[in-house]
Each structure stands twice: as C-alpha cells, then as structure tokens.
Image (cartoon, rainbow, N blue to C red; front, side, top):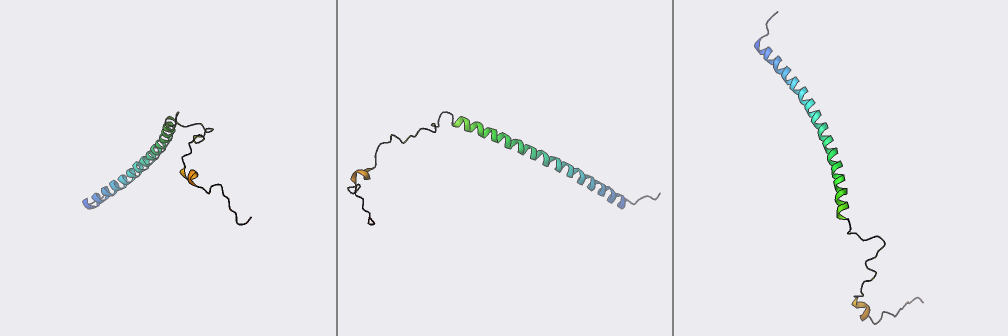
Length: 95
C-alpha cells in the first residue's frame, strides 16, 4: 500500500474537518432556530396574558356604567345662546 504524500494527507484531513464542521454547524443552527421560535411563541402568549391582566386592573372601578350619561346635567355655559337676538326668527325663502 503506497504511502500518501504529506500534502495529500493534509488536504484530506482538512476536507474531512470542513465537512464535519459544516454538518455540525447546520444541526446547531437548525436547533437554535427552533428554540428561538418556541421562545417567541411563549413570549407572545405571556405578553397577551399580561396585557389582559393590566387592562383589568387599570379599568377596575374607574369606568362608568354604559347606561349613564355624564353630560345630562351639564350647566348651560354657552354665551352665544343668550346674546343672539335673532335666535327665534326663522326665515325660509322657499315658503
């Protein structure tokens, strides 16, 4: 069996190492991508539940009921209603 020259042996070892590192890098990248996607889904679920909790606590006891109108008993503060002398005059040129 003929002995390989040192140059060919070195190239062969380098090629095997490059192929091995490439395959290992692919599997590492594929695994890290899946774990990041799973972490993103979990973060979105946690953010949704946190937003609901914050909204419930923020609106607790502060919002009026839907049936009430806070402007029903507002004071009449419009000065134009009192100062307009022509308020009751209606002119319709088509009648």
